Every structure is written in C-alpha cells, then in structure tokens.
Length: 180
Image: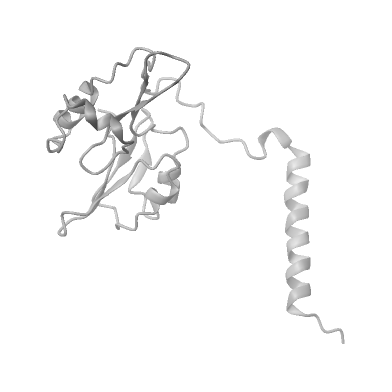
C-alpha cells in the first residue's frame, strides 16, 4: 500500500485547482474576471466634482455637515490654515477638501474627498452581515441596525472612507457619505 504525505497531497490539490482555474480562463478569457452587472445601472446616480473649478472654499463641507446634522468642526470653515495638513473623512466629517501644491502651476489644486460610491464597493463585499449595500440607484447605503462593529469595511476600502464613531459607547457605528 502506498503512503501519501500531507505535503504531497496539498501540492497535488493545488495543481488540480490551478489547472481547473486555468482551463476556465482559456475557455472564456473575456469573462473570467469580469464584474457581473456593473454596467446594468444606466440610470444610476453619480457625483462629479470639477477640480479645475474648485477654489477650496469648503462650502461643500459645510453643506454636508448641515444636511447630515454633523457637529461644527473644531476649525471653522472659513479658516484657510486647515489646508496645512492633509485630512481624511471621519465620523464627524463625511466630506473634506485638501490642497495640493503644484510647482508647474501658479495656483494650488483642491481635491474633495468623500465616498466614491464605487460600482463594486469593497466595503460592502467585506461586510459580514450586509450592513453596507450598493443600491440600484448608485449609493452605497449603510444599515446601522445590521452592523456588528467589526470594522472590516474600513480595512477593505482602498480610499479609507468609512470611519468608526468611537464616542458613543451605547451604539458605535460606521459613518460615511450618504450621497445626499
């Protein structure tokens, strides 16, 4: 009787699995890793920010705070010194504007940062309980009543957008742009 070692079994299983995957790629290479249903939302919503026209006034930040009933920031919206450091979204600020100096241009470039409501959101894919879902209209919607607070969505998002609300011990939750 032939004795098989665990290492040999794992190698042969990996080779067999790789061969099946490769066969699937050869058989239908255009659809092997294509996203399913990404273009099926022709009437979905989108956001466009024309960064060539942004002057860094931060009115979009103020409007976001007002619409979402967020607290006033520590640094007033009129204060231009906020641009001295790069900021990211947080539980109290779903939208932020950063300034980037460019030596080739005389004026700085301003960039608005908020949730991109991705076509294939990594945050929603990482959520174990479906607390983040891509809606048919376009926004990635957060369902606080489903959230476990595991913060996998924060780790999965390549843009570092979802923020954890640490200051309410009774009901900690994820905060992000609502595409209001």
